Image (cartoon, rainbow, N blue to C red; front, side, top):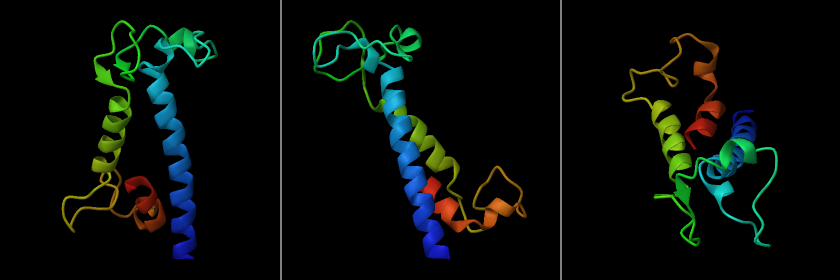
Length: 115
């Protein structure tokens, strides 16, 4: 059961992580560029994200975008993984929860979040 739950959690968190990484990349600058046909990207996310433009892919001549396009997603992911990593054996697996919280014993969840 432990191996099956670990595989389930890894699969779930990898899918969620890749999806969130794509949306974060678009939100912070991906919508400032054009699509393959040279047209601006225009969908449900565009009204909110097309004016942020803090990142760039490095292949365009867009205005703004001093940061690499994956930097915001890398920063958020590193924060989450660091937050879930205990500093010593005395710390609980999820530091923001109490020692006796039921999620402290879900090792598959810990592996999924830390990966």
